[in-house]
Length: 147
Image 1: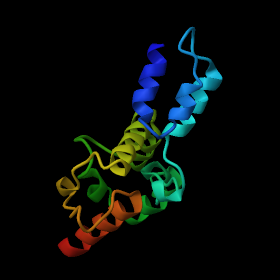
Image 2 (image 1 turned 120 degrees about the vertical axis):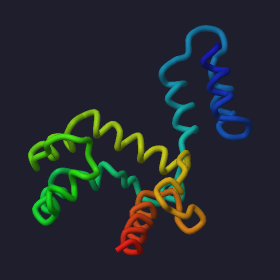
Image 3 (image 1 turned 30 degrees about the vertical axis):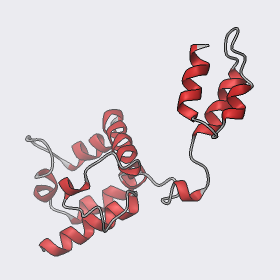
């Protein structure tokens, strides 16, 4: 019963309320009921995700970063990493580590949901959207301006 009322609060009135009404308030919620509820909560259509599912993790893959590592000096990259001795192998290991991947996914989520202050990255929120592609364009523009 508690799960049903919480799901109703998440979905809100008019958006999937018919699905909630199908859930029996007496007894446990069935998996099929929960799946129907959750399928109606999420965004639908391409307009909800203008990046088409693109996340920063799709860009920060070792196979895409390795060629860049060969063109950049290790000192340039190391200035953006915690203090210590860094080798290209260490950096590649970091990029593949589960904690790093999880943080990249978390950052992608807060970026796409607009739960981040873009001005901390020197990005004008009125000029760029809360998408991965727009964020990368903004970073590229800020690097171009500073060079």
